[in-house]
Length: 510
Image (cartoon, rainbow, N blue to C red; front, top):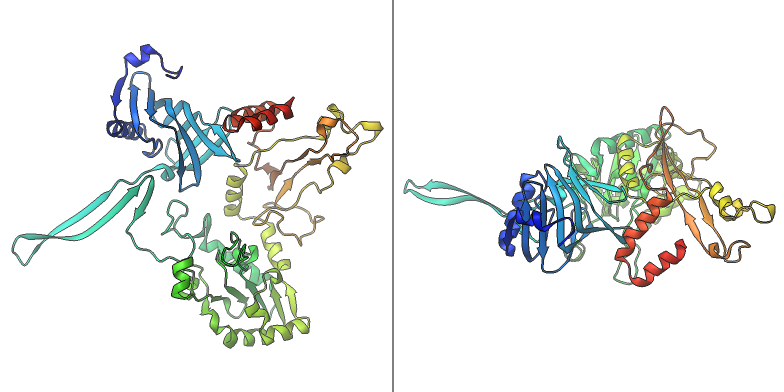
């Protein structure tokens, strides 16, 4: 029994035995405390106890389990005994639960939902790190059957007029509600991930339309821009690498899928050429966005199947004075067109990124929100010049090898790409809405003439910094930086490592 629970407390507890009744009691308690009912997905529970007077609770299961919450992609280990103190909207002094962060396991100690409710739930570790997720990611939809009876021909008989069934397998909910599959998440297919009106998570249709409007303001008159989706790269003849969309194509259209072309001009607005699939492709790869999705989901003014490109695009290219194109993602369907080859021959084809980089350089409020959330999951350590002097690295032979050991720039622009807006000069004055990195790095070669224990070590820490109207905001400011915090993290993480890894950690810190 955990030290959290004494025999005196156990004597005051309501105790149940057996999985069925314990499952029922634990879900009832979570509901009573205002917490999601899928927060404790234990299996084969042998005993559960609750001391209402103090809030102490415990659950014992036959074996520890590793459970993945699919809606957020997080794995959590529940030990054979889980103990806690519960109160309204909170679980405190939690033991027996670990979550996986940065490839290692870290203990959780507190869980709470916002009061008043915001739809968010926060998890904290003993080191002070915290992560926030949607409450819906931890809710289990029980089987629901809705039947409506009505009389038939006045005979008093009844028939089921409608039936809706939601089935639960483990903790993954499936619904019979129908929606159009456009080949990527939508608010209808992934309501736990996206809000109504969003094309990609966190970015709504209005923002994509505004991006295109701003792009056209930069596009010279009588010019046309052609953006190609990134090609699929293959690992083997039949196995592709994980797909990553071209950043400019995604920024303008919101389409996360391969095979498309997007054309922007003052004359037509956004015109999309969409890939066509065979029944065989759909069976093996799933549905993809077509012409209908281009119009309805991505809000294009015009859309055509890709086979129409030879009929429509050459005329658009021929009438343009300049053609802007993302050459890195050049599609053969485009480059094989004689009209494109002619434009390229006469020097009419320009680099599209000079326009898109200028747009992407300043982030929108929605982008900043996503970047703040992204920054909150990073873990960092800072080693500054003063620290290097203290440990005897930068004072060798009276010289200062800092630039030798830190050969990279102090930072770069950050956004959809890790190195974003690369054509924007570093000499340009920073503006509110720009996000940069401050990333001191230290790379000590094995041949370094200094303390032997530091040779062969490399460290890089990135802070993400938003330029504001009044100064700046360090988006990664909540991440642990002090030695005691890092040591605490390592001590917690090492519990989930093998013995050899633990020894390596200890050796590195000695």
